[in-house]
Image 1 (cartoon, rainbow over the protein chains, first blue to last red):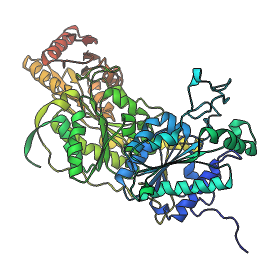
Image 2 (cartoon, chains in turn yellow, cyan; image 1 turned 90 degrees about the vertical axis):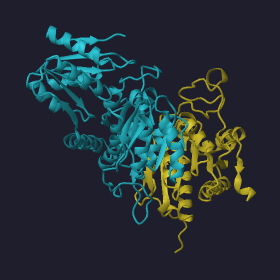
Image 3 (cartoon, each protein chain N blue to C red; image 1 turned 180 degrees about the vertical axis):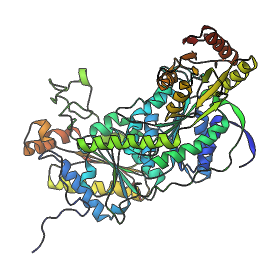
Length: 249
Length: 361
């Protein structure tokens, strides 16, 4: 009998995702796990985890992890990498963690060109706390703290994370991907691979922003949520590679 | 290494960190401790070690926590209002049992305060500004020599007990030059292999975290952390005592104020008054037991400190009402002089009453 589906080797045997049904975090974690397997990274990986929906990453992946306070994962990863330059160091964060409370830590890790990889899940809301307005909440979007929709007078504008990271001289790779379709999932995996490779090659900071659905807090079915990613998010947060130092090699 | 050198407190701390094996320094400038970072930014690259100019104190302390979680010897240094920014990470580091070394060269507060010296961070260091129940080891040097000795000790204790250690100095010590001897770091290496994150090679992944979904396990963890601190208290509580045997009153101070109470005790003894001195070296764990013993012998206390009476409360608590405790203090700025201390002690002895003898400039 031919196996048509298997769990990546680095996933814990007894793991149970704590994500809501239909959430794209599960796909993103699987892509990371597949790459750790394919690139043979497990034995040299130290992950700096975040606070948010992915706080329990260490329960899913059989790798070494250190928990950072909310927003501080890139600082923690800097400490790990500077004292362990031979290790593979990555962060897995939400948009609130990476780009709001952790904006300074994240930006300066890119500016310093730390040889670490960072993954940021952008679902336009604070998922863990029940769907509040965050740094990427879209104009007009209703959340529990923008009950009349995001407007510029009260809340200002959503931020474009991958473009800002690409502007930093220390960044070796910055891309935005999505998980709403199989082609996009395949592109996402390629981008993550690049973000990992630039670290291993010592080129600088590797970054991938992943547009993800949050059916629970968007009050949608998984299908509707993926339609929103495709029809509403991608036009505002365009997919693409914004910086890639490997192109010049 | 055995020769005496004339050196500034901040440089002494920095060089002692190098001697203790510090692999990487993470920091952000703030007066009066900036020389620590300046010194290390020059020396660490020469030694093939790390120096990171962090974006903030929040960044610096979280870099230290991440690095320390891999078993690396690392440290950061800062001062008062900026150490306030590090309280979140200190709470995490205690729960995560990560060996953080933090040097606080105190300046005046509250708020931005100013760069003149003070001792206003006793509470911040000993009781902490982070959330939840946790305890930090706090060492308070009184001389540049002790800045060296206690830096060695800080690195050792942090790793021995997997607990953050604060070296609590002040602007006076940081900026003062004194003869001192580096010697050899007297402490042995601590094996960190059982817990340090090194990558899951030939074993399952390890995680260092404070998040606690299991309520019962979390209760047990906090109780275990406090049991550990009881052991630290038993093994590591240290203090210095002088002329207390026949003393009617014991002047009590920490950090560089120790120098002035030593001089005041000499002056008061010359005037025929039975005055002794006591100085906690570890502010946490605090030498409650010894203070209680002295109080039980009927000895009164006068706490001399450059704040509004922070250690005063711990001394008062330790005496358990067995004797009276007075406070001689100024919030910050020009150090209480020996003359001011002597005059205040004479007033206390005349009135034979507990009181607060705040000295104004």
